[in-house]
Image (cartoon, rainbow, N blue to C red):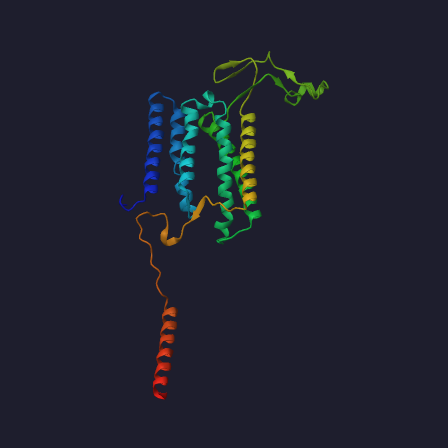
Length: 284
């Protein structure tokens, strides 16, 4: 692929993609040097994440508008900033803002699915809105399953722990037997050790974080769906790509050629015109 044949937008995409990959690789190498396997593993996942926009374009045969592409690409490395550079603790709302935007992005993709599946130029606004919301909610649920799987198999900390000062009675069976239904139970005297660190409170292992993430992503999906219905889907962020102008940047467009039937029709028309002219000449 020659650089001269690429458009400015494509060159900018390529440069941004290389920068994102370089950031992930450098972070991964630093993690290995510091023997932080968690950061190294998250860096490897981030390398895969940055290719998601390109894979989606190839799979669904559309082109993401450049502004949205830049946003999505930056978004894919934001979780690595949270894990490797402690943004989750430095910026209190970092996790919430990421999950909120995730709900919006996946809702955008869900709204485009009816066009992909039906291969029609126009689809019902209600159908697109339905797909936008529930596709995004489904992806958020799958993501939480992935976080649980990653924490279980690879000993990461994708599901953040939460310290609870009080417990609902349903957590303790003895309190149900004593008739203390509906009361909050102090747990100041309860000590638990997690990863070698002692806590004088109860530690919720990711449950509250997972439920909060799903709620935030659902809110993001709902906001986008509402806006989509209000504007009736007029503003497309995904542009369909024809086969002859697919995402191969150095491919030459295929010129339209006449079919055999079209050529025969034109020949018949020209022959009839010639016969009519000959008859007029004879009459004259």
